[in-house]
Image 1 (tube, rainbow, N blue to C red):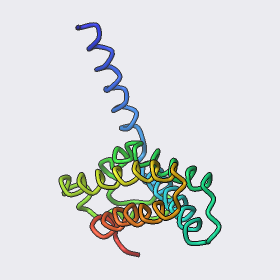
Image 2: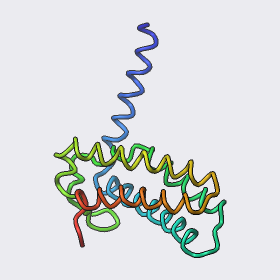
Image 3: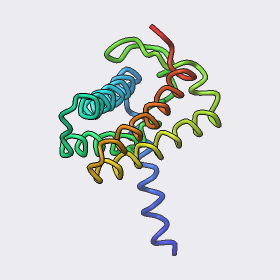
Image 4: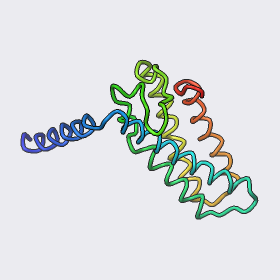
Length: 152
C-alpha cells in the first residue's frame, strides 16, 4: 500500500507546484481564454438553432468543446493574487469568488451538469432539444456572471 500511495502523493504535489508557478497574469489570461472559447462555442450552437440551417456536426463539435472546458478544472486558475490584475484585459472576477466558496461550488456544479448534458443532447441531432438545453446551459452562465463577474 505504501508503494501505491507515494506516487499518488508525488503526483498531487507536483501538480500543485505547477499551478503555484503560474504567474498571476498568465492565470488570468488562461481563465479569460477559456471563457472566451466557451462563449464562441455557445454562439456556434445558438447560430445553428436560430439560423434555420441546423448542422448537427457543428453543434456536436461546439458542445464537446464546452463540455471539455467545463470539466477541465479551470477553478484552479483562481489562484491567490489573481483577484486583481490584467490578463488580456483587467480581470472582472468579483472578490466573492475567493470568499463565497459554497455558492460558487453550487454554480460551478450546475454549469458542469448542464455542459455535460449539452454534449449528450447535441449527439441526438434534435435541434429543438438542443435549443432547450442551450437555454438551460446559458442560464447557468448567467447565474455565475450575475454573482461573480463585475460588469464593464
